[in-house]
Amino acid sequence: MPTLYLMRHAKSDWHSAAQADFDRPLNQRGARDAARMGQWLQEQQFAPSIILSSPAQRARQTVLAVAEASGVEEHEVVFNQDLYLADRATLLNNLRSIPDSIDCVLLVAHNPGLDELVEWLASESPPVSESGKLMTTAAIAFFELPAGWAMLRRGGLSLQQLQRPRELP
Image (cartoon, rainbow, N blue to C red; front, top):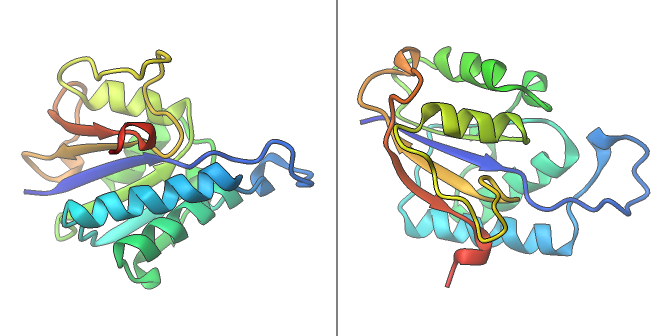
């Protein structure tokens, strides 16, 4: 059964010297949370066929920390410009284009598109955090797909787990 992990990039540094939003790096908490979520993924026996990510600096750093902590090879990471600040439709189109031979995908992107995608895919309303947010920074939503990637539809997936770094033991 194909599996889909949707991850929001970790916490970025709004006070960095980066001139553009695209270049904003992770802050200390973000780097720590990305590594913790990578360790959590490894504990879940995470074995992605591919990781699709926004190329923004904060997403790039998140993916590389997750890959290192979970034992994923860097060559399994694909940075796609279309995923930078992508809306739900763009994220969905990227997922629907995945060949059915790929059985496990991690997609790393940004809000609000990621929140909208998780809500759109889930058959029931996903749980929000104590602060009322869905996909907090570095959160991962895990879905199992009953059919191929092209068959993704509104309310068609059961959310297996939504893990946020602050909720880890």
